[in-house]
Image (cartoon, rainbow, N blue to C red; front, top):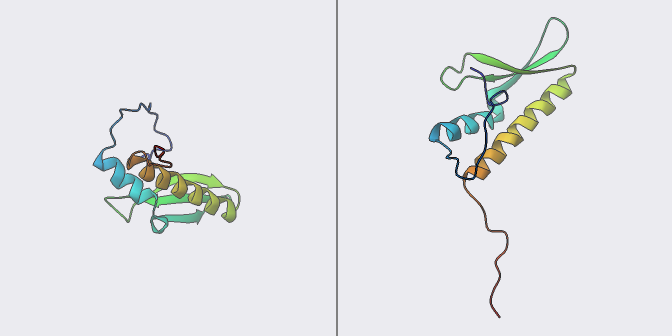
Length: 99
């Protein structure tokens, strides 16, 4: 399964967010679904467990350091958390009162 990191899509204001999108983004925004493994070449690989099969892990990125790998995971979590927030629709940031 390839996650949205490699998925190409076009966004328009009328694009509908599906319940499947929300489920996937919620899964990807949860740090407990991620892990870091060390490869034989010394690099660190970030992996996320499958939504339907938590025993199956999907590789996402490779980094030179464990700190870099954790930063990549944190960035992914932040990205999907923002997508979840945006899926709720626009939020009012300021309202003007008539005088």
